[in-house]
Each structure stands twice: as C-alpha cells, then as structure tokens.
Amino acid sequence: MRTATSWRCRDSWPWRRADRLRSGPHRAIRDGRTLRRPVLPQRHPPPPHEGRPVQRRVRTLLTALGFALILAACGSDSLTDDGAAPEPTTDDEAVDGDDEAVAANGEVLADRDDGPGIREGFYWQTDEEPSSTIPIDEIVSGGPPPDGIPPIDDPSFETFDEAAEWLSDDSPVMVVRAENETRVYPLAILTWHEIVNDTIDGEPIVVTYCPLCNSGLAFSAEIDGHVLDFGTSGRLWRSNLVMYDRQYGNLWTQFTGGAIVGERFVGQRLDRVPTTLQGFAEVRATDPDAAVLSRDTGHSRNYGRNPYVGYDAQDNDPFLFQDEVDGRFEAMTRVVGFPDGDGTAVLLDHLTEEQVVEFEDENNPVTLWWAPGQASALDTSDIDAGRDIGQTAAFIPEVDGQRLTFEPAVDLTGGEDTVRFRDAETGSGWTLAGRAVEGDLEGERLEAVSIDDTFWFVWAVFKPDTDIIN
Image (tube, rainbow, N blue to C red; front, side):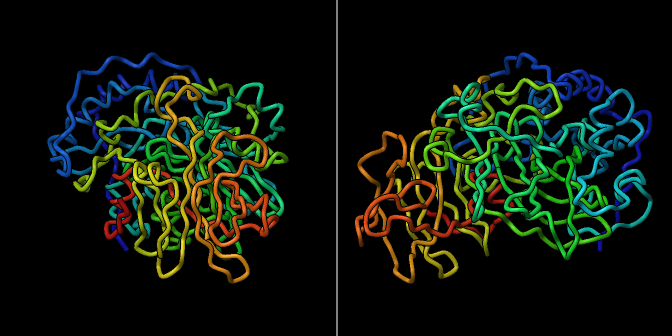
C-alpha cells in the first residue's frame, strides 16, 4: 500500500498562469469546437537508439502548450518541482456550467451495479491513504474534469450502408468480434469520447481508445461478480488514459485494464476482449451484418476531425510522458504488441514488409497479418485523409489440431469476401477476420489473439522485458 500525496495547492501555484492559458482550449475541445493548431518551432529528432534526456522531456512539457488540440484527449498539467500536481477539479466544479458532464457523472447503465460513484469524491481527493499499485504522484492531473471528455453510455448503432454516408473506405475503426455478433467503433467518434460502455453477445464490455497511445482496447466490464461502467478521469499515467469506475471510484489504467488506485479491485485486471484496428471497407466486406456505432451520441462533436494533427510523426515526443523513453527505437515508432506474459512486439515497418510474421509467444504459435487499407487517425486534420498505415490481426494458426502456415495472397485489391492470405497446407483462402472463405477449410474460423497497435514509448514502459521482432 502506498501513501497518497496531498494534491492541494497554494494560490501562488506556479502553473496557475498556464492553467488559465489552457482553460480556453479545454473548454473549446470539451464542447466539440475545433481549434487551429499553431505552428510549432522545428524540432530535430535525437540520434537513433538513444534515450531522450530529462531536459528534452521538460522542453516537451513547455511546448505542449502549443499542442492545444492534444488536450482533446486525456489531459494536462505537469508536476511541480516538489512532485505535487495541481489540485484536481472537484465534482462541484465539474457540474458548474457543463450539463453534459452532469449527465455523464450521474448516469449509470441500468444493468450495471449501483455504488457510491464519485459524488463522495475520488479516493485521491481525500486525506485518506488509498490502496495503490503505483506512486500516486505519477498520475498527472488534467484540465478536463471527470467525464469532461464524455463517455458514451447509451450507444446507438447503424448499418454499413448508413455509416458509408459519412465514413470512407480507409476510415479507421475498432472491431470487436464475438461468437454471434460483431460491433464496429469508428475512431472518428472514439477520438472525442474515448470510452463506450456497451454489451456484445449480451455480455457487458467497455470499449476504450487512448489517442495519445493509439491504443484501442476492450475489456469485460464484469469483475468478481460486479458489473461496472467506466468514465474518463481527466488523468494520465505514462501518457495513457486513466479510467475510473462509477460504482466505486477506482482508477484504472487503460493500457493493461488494471485497477491502480482505490478501495476495490486494486491490483486486479479486467479480462481483455480481442480487438483489431482496421479500415471501414475491409470490415464491411468481411462482416457485412456488423453494427456500426453512430454519431447519435447525445453530444455535439466534430466527428471525423482529428484534434491531434501530426501527433504520430516519427520525430514527435509523447505528450506528458514522465518516464525515460527506451532508447532502442524512437518514441513514436509503431509496434504491434502481444500483451500476455512479458510480451512480444513486432515493429510495424517489419510487418508491413513481410505481411505475415509467425512466431512462438509463450510457447504458443501465433500468426500476425498485415494488409493495406486503414488511415492513420492521428495524421491529418481530416481523419479519413491520413496516410495508409495498414491493418493488422493475429490468430492461433490451428484448425482442429492441424497447424497451419500462412502467406500473403496475390489479391490485395479488396472487395467482398476478400482473400488476403492462404495457408500452405490446404491452399484455403482467408480473410483478415480469420475466416476461410474458399478451399478445403471454407467456413472455418481461427481463434483471435489480443494485440495492441500502439507506440513504442508506451509499450516499452509497460513491457520493459519485451522481445522484439524486427
């Protein structure tokens, strides 16, 4: 158990002026208005394979004021010299003048557990000593109050034909496939909400996206017999979204689904639900009956616009990342990570070249696939116009006990029942969804493996002993 650090500050707090400067952009982005990104001074990347020094990170924090649009996601203020963070926004402050935050703070899904919620205050806002798995002063306070970036609690869905009226072929979407149902969550929406409390196949799930890490992850919302729903805390840990459950006020890190501060469940993790980040047209071809999250969210947002223009540029620094960047690769290098055990990471550049990478992870066979057709959600101001970073999926390469090996198919043009890959054993054709659509194994489906399409800086800090395939 760790002792909570007091976060109460004096009127002479040195970052008050910065807070005032940030308050306008915070309100604008929270209310769904898009701001023009200021031109930043030219910065040069450090030499390859060298860690960034502390001075570089401090300089990043100062220039972060210029990244007003990055505040659309998770937040915020940096720590002071003595390690304290600014006083968190109280619930009363969150209520004042923000009807959407009021609704989000007070609303709990009907099939979720009732609990004290946050009306009695988060544990880190009290003088008590909450249980925690990390030093609390590593959690960076943000401008948005709890649910100031409003989660979607009552999601509405539409057909692919309806969604095609506003999404393009390469629009990035997050896909959750269950036994009897597939749901599709456009990043054009998730960028502005970060959390969707939902169900699939009748089971409660929480769908999450942290733009600062490009991590689109889903979890079971049930733990120890309790069904929870989640909100955005307005905090960051390791530049990653910190969620809270509305029933007990615990803090959870999105990257692992682990409870890190609170009274209940601390040290436990939510069960992962496999997800993939793919292009709209690809999923439309492989899962034509899937339900697509609609813009009918109850909030007015500029869906389809990217408030993080250029964030994933190779020479950028991660936003409000307090740790040293592992010097083996540049911070914003894209990787596909396997979260089980110590984890294995495959560099996206290597996967793009090979298209199929097969290896043993924790003594289990894995086949990892890549195909073109997904725009970067963090590149241009228009999400759909982002550069093509491709789309990935991973599976256990076995059918009825038979081990399969795969290679890219010749046809990479897209279309209905697109054959992206073929197995060497039977010549059957497989889609990026892991389904055989022609050949001896037609109708078979591979078991999906959880992966993280993310950046090197966050993968390496959560998985310092990671193996790298390059």
